[in-house]
Length: 202
Length: 202
Image (cartoon, rainbow over the protein chains, first blue to last red):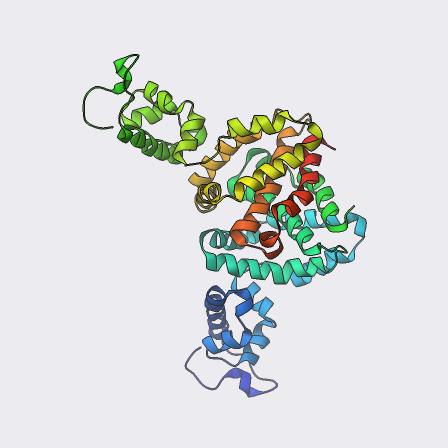
């Protein structure tokens, strides 16, 4: 926080929402809090305290904890926005929609780079792994699993996620030839039935 | 190489195969050569030159380049030994045999730790990625693809590998809850049909 004046959050309706600096300081504090406490352990209140601002200001700028995380990690996509659309469509095409969404996002360097940074952090430090695992579980797996009608829904969704994560790891990180050079559509054609099987048993 | 005496490889039949030090020096040279040139670019001859020994001595200690790599990276399993057995059995159980072999190996920390070191190196440096990708392509994917009867055999095998790699990444590195806590057999039951589909179209 800058040293100047009262907290903008206390100015009431019509207030100006603080300086660009304040926003950046909240994000800095959020990155530290998520790294130190994991995704589950961090809170909007704790992030506000670390940034010396009112929690209402964090809500004002970002909304929920999930959205603070997305902004702090510079993730270009909000799972809370894209997943409901994918889940809402025709059930028979669920696997195909997931495969196409995921591969489409990863084909964009602006999406891929921050995701690779998260993945590197998760493979090289337990703190990074904890942060990513809790965010993935809370923000993605639970949302998708709620739409899967099976006693082992969470395991099925995680195994489907493993298929997609493995593909982008071999395609974009390790660069294994046929996966690195195939088109998105060739890969979608192979993995869509797999995802469909995990998610709907079909 | 130790400074003492002529190269043991030049002593002819019945020679003693050098000191334990010589073996270690060959492995040190091999790690440097693989990191600098990748798996495809490295050669037994180049490794011997870097270790200042005769190539015959490298062959004597280790055999092929593949086996030098396996020893240098402390990989506990030789794909050239285990893959033919898996490929030779009943075709209808191919996916299940692969899933069980892979998960069984990864459940052993003595297997997991050197593999995780390779994976970390691949996610954090392009040299590490090149080394792993070329070894995986040459030592594993090609062997398995030769047993798959499909025009896109290499892509199918790589996608099957992606499923397994994704599972162990989420299970052992990121620690995503249902995959981290499920039993090997629960996971085998889910992924075996997927692998079977990729490898045999069934």
